Amino acid sequence: MKQFCLLLTFFLVAIMHLQAQTFGGARHKMAIFTPLYIDEAFDNAGSYRFSGKNFPKQSINGLEFYHGASLAIDSLNKLNIPLDIHVYDTKSKRETLAQQFSKCAADGVELIIANCSLSELNTLARLGADKKITVLNATVPNDANTTDNPYFVVMNPTIQTQLEGLYNYLKTKYAGKQVTVITRKSSSEKYIRTVFETLNEHFKNAVNFNFREVNDDIALKALGTTTQPTEVGLYVVGSLDTDFGMRVLKQFSESRKNYASLTLIGMPTWENIDLGKADFKGVEVIYSTPFYNARTDAASRYISEYYTKKMYARPSDLVFRAYGLTYRFGQLLNKYGRNINTKLGGSEFRAFFDMNIQPDYQNGKVSHYENKKLYYLKYLDGSLKGVN
Image 1 (cartoon, one colour):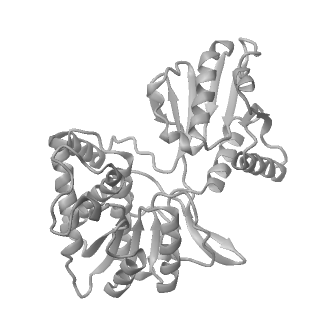
Image 2 (cartoon, rainbow, N blue to C red; image 1 turned 90 degrees about the horizontal axis):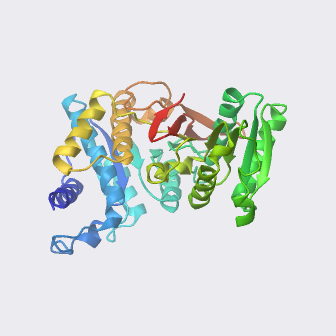
Image 3 (cartoon, helix red, strand yellow; image 1 turned 45 degrees about the vertical axis):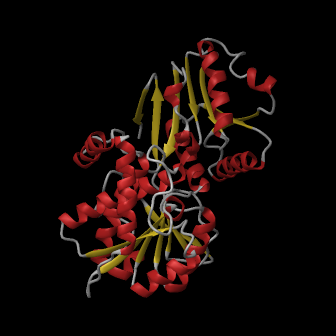
């Protein structure tokens, strides 16, 4: 009940923040777009629609992002950074996304940090290019099909970037070893295989790939059953489907005694798998993420302790991501103003995780910017840690 009341309080704070902005002549301005579903939680009179024991679950993602951003705003205020920060509910029923963006432009907003869906990103990217306002895509690993748009930044790397990073990781860490890539006949998995094959042509077979299709339960059950106990198993599960990934993990966990050692490398979607819920003892699991935070630094410990005492819960990765992006880009905006889109690289004002923001070119022009930084995490016998 205490956790619910605090979440409800933050919801009310979000509304107040939406309605009560402050403005200053020389102050730079940024905006946070996140799905709060405020109109579904409160009626026109401001009364809460749910009972005292319920909370709108669809609001949790957006509220966690908002809370991380609000904690960063507190930190920026303590540093006396002169910023005005607006918060917009992307699920508002009273205003369209385009109407909210128009308010941003009219108010002089120079940077938008967006936690929203792909369709919403398409709208924000187009409007950002038109009004020359930098839009940071904080969560969706997609470039929204942008071209000739130096005002759009992808913070969660696209699948193409993820696969290129994984190829380089395999080339460096497992030189000369056979890497078996498990796929099915779906279009996305054919794409993954094609990327690996194309890269291998370019680098003259730098990775010793063996592609293996697993299209039915018989083929799945055959995984790991014909090896010698002295064999070292090294597999890449080339599928974005986490359900399929879990099935492969389960099958290999049952046959792990057939190997001297067994390593399974998954796609970035594996960060959504709760590896601790299943028994994968003895199976080394590796996957990549752009936002790894060991939570050992002072700021992370403060946020974790704050959540423990006030929320009776652990802060999600989304809280830290929102904090890190708001903190860093708030300071960059203060330093560089509207030209922030040309000052995205480097390590200034780092919080929690590194970034490697690079321009993607098309026909000689900047198509968009993308974060190319990837961390590789290893899960083994209940322990998760960075390996690069």
